[in-house]
Amino acid sequence: MENNEHQTIIKRALSGLSEAEFTSLTKHVGWPSFKGNQIYSWIYKKWVSSFDEMTDLNLKERQYLKENYILSPLTLSEKQLSKDKTIKYLWRMNDGNLIESVRMFMEGHDSYSACISSQAGCAIGCPFCATGTVGFKKNLNANEIVDQILGMQRDTKERISNVVFMGQGEPLLNYNEVLKAIHLVKDSVGIGARHITLSTSGIPPQIKKLADEKLQITLAVSLHAPDQKTREILVPVARKYKMDELMGSLHYYYNATKRRITIEYVMLEGINDQIDKAKQLADLIRDLHCHINLIPYNPIDSLSGVELSRSPMNKINKFKEVLEKTSRKKVTIRHERGIDINAACGQLANKVR
Ligand code: SF4
Image (cartoon, rainbow, N blue to C red; front, side):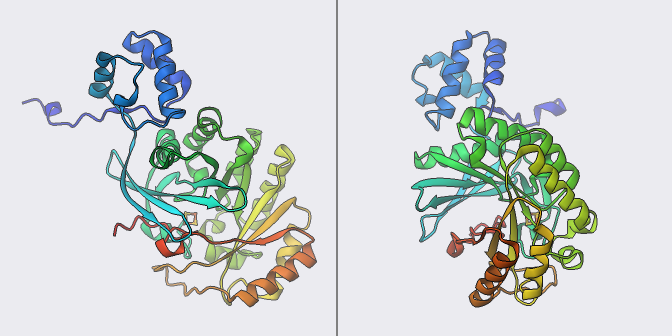
């Protein structure tokens, strides 16, 4: 028996392909191009879960698709529902790797936001983040990134109107696929650039590259400390990219896009929540067009050896007050969602119950 007879053929997934890819796919099969438009519309507009639901294709065409393709690159492995309506999804990819994404209800907006992953695991290893403890597994391709949103829409039959690249992974270390996914989210899923946020641990050369794309997406940066020494403990990539270089890239991003930056700052007792740190932070961001989001720390089982605990609420409020007064910038405290199902910021670790 030939070796390749033992190999499992991995069928190509259709969900997450672009409109142009559908056109070339139908051309390849020898079908008229409108068939490609029909399949595209079933996947992106009607959120179907099977080829059988594509009722304007005849039985033979549907059979052909079933034999040669799969609909989604993700299989739902587990789903957890929080008391606050947050849903955490655990997906299995065709190569067996797992990723998580979270759907949150945005009160006041009456809409849903999807927090999606761009890598399985993460190489950065921030000590406050559960994903960092998993280690890096792989970069997701654009289909796998976009299908997390489509999968949520297929499951709930409700539209997602905001997307944050804030799940597992450092999106800027998977630059090309993330960029392709952003274009798909805009053009195919139908979510405007201003409703897309990319969150990074701070990779200055990639931030500048993204700025040059001139997209109207929001850039969020996990700063977490106003000084180099503390930042190196909390965001290990800071050992490579110093504070000056990072701040320079943020100014560059604003100048290129005119989009206000979001500064993320996880509040850790005794590490970065002191009043002098609030003043230092105010100095650092004085000339930057930004908004600061303080994030109450969500406990995880950390393997890093760095002892971490959540700042008490009175300390967070005081930090906010001083920062607001000294910087004259808008400071918010993140309203956490999905803590009871480990779906809040920093808690995604692919744990199967
Ligand atoms: S916070 Fe982000 S960059 Fe840091 S380990 Fe977690 S996923 Fe990676």
